[in-house]
Image 1 (spheres, rainbow, N blue to C red):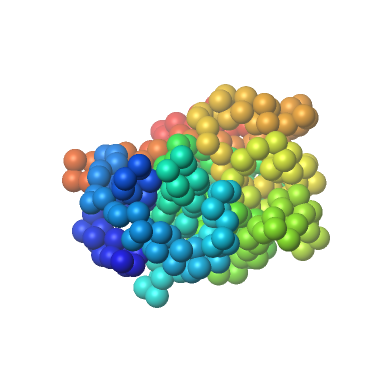
Image 2 (tube, helix red, strand yellow; image 1 turned 90 degrees about the vertical axis):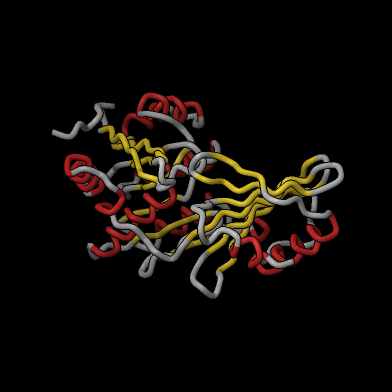
Length: 288
């Protein structure tokens, strides 16, 4: 059984992720829809192992590594991109597949109002700034990040994007996919990015102290930084960033904008972005 079998099952449903969760005697399959997770048919363990090995090979992962988590990308012939993530549980390696399409939204298509758009564009052009997109898993943070990158590229700017891994490619962007097995981590990639004469630096996600501090240093160097973070509104984001660094005093110096977002499901199953935008003082932008 190939991954195409599962993708074909989802053409009529707005599925964002497929979860393969090993149980004692079977592999539980769950699909993430706007209203939550729904169960699919279970998969046998042997059949699952064949599928897992094939996906690891296609994603360029280490097929012999079964203890440590791994992440990779697969590009389908139809333009869809799959992010592959593995994590060992007590009954074996779990697999999560996130689906991306080749269609990229503009800032206007995201549904942001004119006041929010005006503030975002103003803060991006101000320099010495850190713009953070926050929200829960599956809230569309990567989509918003890519829309911001695309706008900067279209405006004639150079953007260096450092991700782990690169999820959606934006033409004209210098995209760097981390590879810690050869020493290409966030520290080295961001330091090298500063030597590439960027106008903007995009960091896929702040995951810990090291990434946070490199984002702050890059912003302090005069390069606007755009990144994502699992967090809430402005105050929660500010506290989270401060807790992730040994230099919390720098957070207030560079944090210039927070976009907190979530996806709202309509009765028809369509998803709509609901975003709240905060300026550098923590004041929310309200549509007039």
